[in-house]
Length: 416
Image (cartoon, rainbow, N blue to C red; front, side):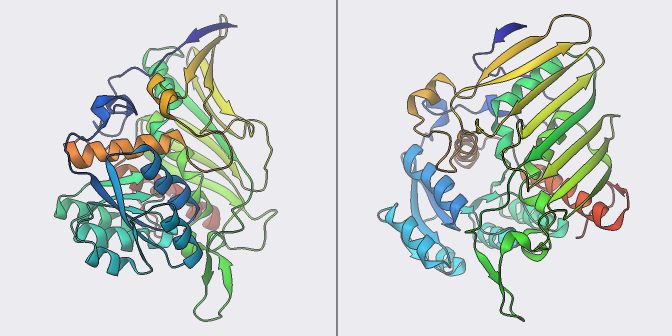
């Protein structure tokens, strides 16, 4: 097997591979590059709503450790232990247990980071946008399509940035795979195979208390709170598949349910078949009861002349600092390995995280840098509201299909 090195992902014409004309990750300078940093003397003031694992160990950690142009002025969480820890990590920040009060009181906040459970994303985001704040909201954008539309409209009406936390869009390996497809390495792309095999949700997650029964349940177990299991995680892979396909789905079909983890409403496995409007087909498989599976996250692209595959195992997290390897296998000829560094030279000089231990990943750092470029310089929003809505749409359509046995056309927006 021959091997090629790709020192960085080059810029490319995406009109055939993206749903709109927004620039990809190569358009945003990365840490250490002068273009990445805000040009104004005034810092961008963040307020963070949600100080659980993702809010505190990713967004707050990135803001405090890697973004000198950001000041975190306020943090909100209804769980006192989470709030106290976040405030201890952020000297000078004020704490709140009501985001309405935080937004009303902290007039100097420029942007709100929304990292609360899924069912609260829409209400917090719309309130922040209506208060004139820019918003970076965690995925899934919303658990109902009507809420996604409300969020997009609020951003448009208030002339504010709305970015959705589909951070996989800032992964260099996916960028490179799209580049190789564009370059004709596997001929015309015809078929996509993807998977996510992982373990169960964090047992220490916030517990939702049912107002009628008083029972407290991990919020990710409840359809009312999470929307669906695919919305909570597989959405990243489905978003990347949508990006790579470069066209809207035409139909979404799924099977699945609870084969192992039966103590909840949300599913533990699914198998999807997606037909795209450009003729592409995709098969995607998903489980949350299978930790330790080799190649637990893979993407395989099959074309008319060959295939390419990328995958990681449990020992190599996305936030790792090593290289990714794409294997290109022509149907006639010699297989070739394309090496894609996960970090640029600038990132290597400043990145202080190691795989494991914390939830910080370099893709999330890049999404913050892109967000700041949109807020301070008017750069196009790459993972914008429509990207977030489409990713949620695929996940919700699959959820409806596996529960009803129906094939869902893309034109029929899921209302689950």
